[in-house]
Length: 296
Image 1 (cartoon, rainbow, N blue to C red):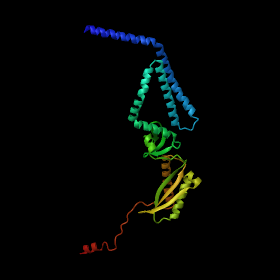
Image 2: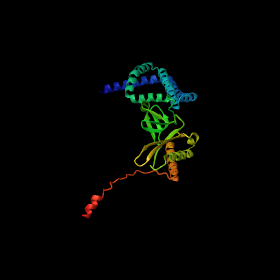
Image 3: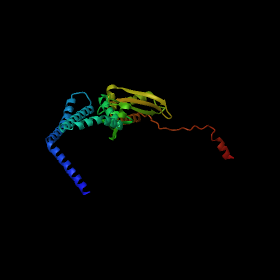
Image 4: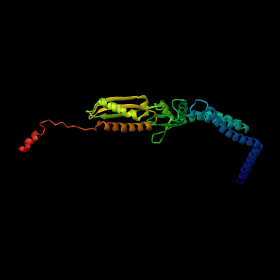
C-alpha cells in the first residue's frame, strides 16, 4: 500500500514538473496573450464609442445605433479570443470549440426562443421610423411615452410616471397607436342640455367658450359640434377640437379646462345642464279607490 502511495506521489510530482516546464516554456506566449486580452478589451470599448460617433451622422434611431455599437464591440472580443487561442497554441481546442458551436447554438436557440424572438423584434423596432424616443404610444393596453427600445423590451412611461416594460415581441405583433405622428391631439367631450334650451344658442355659446380659451382653436376655428341623441333627461351633444400637444396628460388637462369653460358659459347664459331624473306619471283617478275605501 505504501509503495502504491509513493508511486502515485511520484507520478503527481512528475506531472506537476511537466506542467511547470510547459508554463516556463510558454511563459512568453502567456504574457503576450494577457497583453492581447487587455488590448482587446480596451479596443472593444473604443470601437463601441467610435461606432456611436460615426452613426450619429446617419438617420438610424438611437436604439439601433446602440445595437450596432454593441455588436461591433462583441465582434472585436470574439476575434481577440481566437487570436489568444492561436498564441497559446491551442488550435486543437479552437477546432473543438468551433465543432461544438453548432450543437451548442442549436441547444441555446431552443432554450432561448423567447429571448431571441424579443432580440429580433427589438432590431426590427429599431428600424421603424414612426416609433422613436419621446413618442406617446398605446400598445397592449398600455399608454405612455417611449423612454427606451432595447433588445429585450420597449419601456414606456405612463401619465402617472410609472414605467412599463413591454416585451418587443408583443409590441411588434400587436397594433400600435402612435399619438405623436402629428403635432396635435383631438379632445372629445360629451355633455347635455335641458329640453327647454335653445339648441342653436347652446352651440354658439359652446363654440365661443372653446375658441376664446384655446389658442390652437382660435387660430383654426376647427370645432366639431354634433347633437347626438334625445337622452332620458337632456339633449346630448359631442364636442371635438384640437390642441397643440400629443401628450395624453395634456389632453386630459384640456378636457378638464373645457368642462370648466363650458359650465361657466352656460351659467352666465342660464343654460341648464340637467342631472338624470325620473318622472312618475299617475292616472287622474289613481287615488280615488283609496279615498272611497277610507270614507267607508
